[in-house]
Image (cartoon, each protein chain N blue to C red):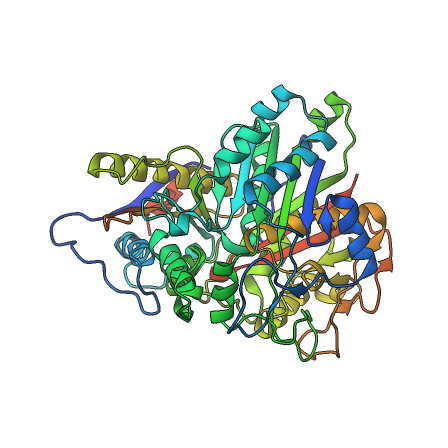
Length: 188
Length: 383
């Protein structure tokens, strides 16, 4: 099946994108809000208001790839454990990337597979500058596309919300989301 | 249910063979200690010895002895699998390597960390001669099974002829206290899947590796096929951030896709290695999924969750359970669903209770479900 990119969104797109919108239930880390923000922009530009049309939503996968993973959540858990403090229960729910994928899937009615991956090759050497951060996010996007293409060719989905999200410990966050699907989905 | 994901018969369809397995659990290193543990039916849970559990609601985990290191233990199970599959050095470097991992304990403490996985993949490559993983799966409790399904798909779509899939998790203070904070750990120190009075899950060390290749490639190399990966399916619930759909809709579609790929009817499946975490809500959802996908055949399929014996190894659990399913089919032994107290009307299944059961089914399913509604089903057939 030939697929095309049906919609695309990024974070940040300009100076107005200084602060990621908070997502209820997610704390202390930019990672999940970043994923939610690019997903929301991408899906709303294609589907309008949530949820997605049933026949399309139920055959749409979520393929999320990240070079960083959720560093801030991991660090927050480790810091609480090392200090002998109680781990905040909300960190449990957001401790793996499936949680925000589930948030998107539930909100938009995307009932295809949920696959979260990290690209095999590239990791940053030290905290990356903007150029390297963009490059890593491009690699993550390519990885998410490869993951989605396999699901679609293999038959478990017709379309996929493809997301690349990198949230560096220094605070910079870069994300891209693309909806890929059959070329006939270009018409409603 | 069967219509979803259906496809025309493909006469030239590639058969997917499992030619190597390696595994370590609290029962020991290797598949023999695991099979012995499954046969004994005695859970491996003990008070945690490697980290402090003071102030937590339980102390129990299923841990490997000593102070295991993730990279070393993963390299060891990969070595087991590669040796079993009789892979040459060239075969190893040419194979696609897919790895499923949990957040790394050291990376979480490194202020200069640039990813949550840390040095483990590089340590494995150095120790085994494998290339750096082509992809790392972090999809929570379906990471390992998703990697195995993807490996099969990569082979059946002609992307590769052979993949090495590995997954590893060692219980540490971070994961233990995180799951304690989530109030998911069983305060009575036992995992009681599908039982009335179940209190939750317990964590366990788990490492597994599987060599997956086309049956044709295995035959060309003249190696033994341990089992066939006859079908696989992945789907989502579109329901909640962390909870499964109460009707098991995503898992039911994953099962239907796996059976459809294998062209196997529900009545032909003799055993289900269930996700069965021992959590009240999730076990009921899984029972609903089995009924939804199997319809009347749900009454005659034997079901157990071996998490009641070896614990929950998070990102690695689904690959450990694929190995368990292969071992069970080969040995003709359906492992017991331990910890059972009494029937729960929300989980009406033919559970393997009391002791492991002798049976030689042709087909078995390994089911897994995760946060975000992610669900997988792997259909294993005797070779």
